Amino acid sequence: MYEHIVWQIYIIILKNKLFYLIFFTFVLKKMKLRIDHNSQIPLHKQAEELIRKLIERPEYRDGQYLPKEVDLSEQLKISRNTLRQAINTLVTEGLLVRKKGVGTRVEKKKIFSGASNWLSFSEEMRILGIEIHNFELQIYRHEVSAEVATFFNIKAGTKVMRLERLRGKKEYPFVYFVSEFNPQIPISASEDFNRPLYEILETDYGVIAQTSKEEISAAAADAFTASKLEIKPGEPILIRKRYVYDINNNPIEYNIGCYRADSFTYTIESKRNL
Image (tube, rainbow, N blue to C red; front, side):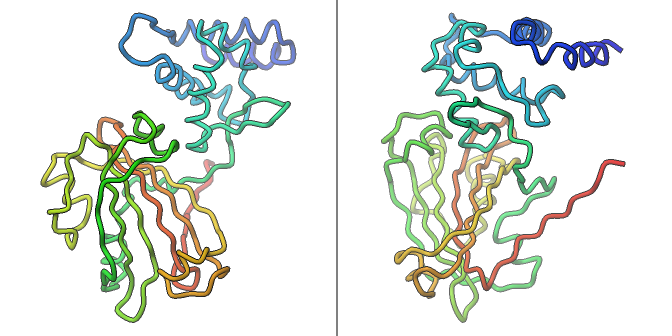
């Protein structure tokens, strides 16, 4: 009953900025969400988690705009640069969309794999009855990009283990994978990567992969990727990006897979809520 009343009030006052900010403050207090300036957790990470919880509320799920950055930073008592760092992370993950001159809104059309029992590539191919061959494999320490550093909450330029694998049928390769791992996981080149990756993480390091957030996009193959997949530059490929978390919601793997378009179809099953 209480939630229903709050929702009705929200509908009535949404068009008025002053009342909207009052309502936003009320929501923050009701959810007991605040920035703790005495905490050892960085302010931008606190803001990120706060906004992450906020946009799960029904008021924001359907593409609603957040308050302006200047107003939101005042409400949270943090600088705009700190707030912008938090928002950038959520934009990178596809949870928010920033429109220049308009504002930042919750993404309502982003599609993730969403499967409760998502599978590793090895498991997917085993179920499909496809025997996988490893054409190339190398692992080495590598300086992370700004995007990966943000995902792992580490400094840009930090070196992490990077695993590159070219895989496919015995006739030809059809996917080129690049995985980068949280530096807290001491994975090394001595591993037997003929084993499924998540089996290695769980068995050898006690890290259980539970959640995968995915982004799917299409692109034209550049010269490097085309040479790996044995196609011509400019031919279409499917890019599948995964943000993988463990059972404690800690980021463990950043993965990009580039697939030959003639060898891979991504299927999503959706059901209406009736």
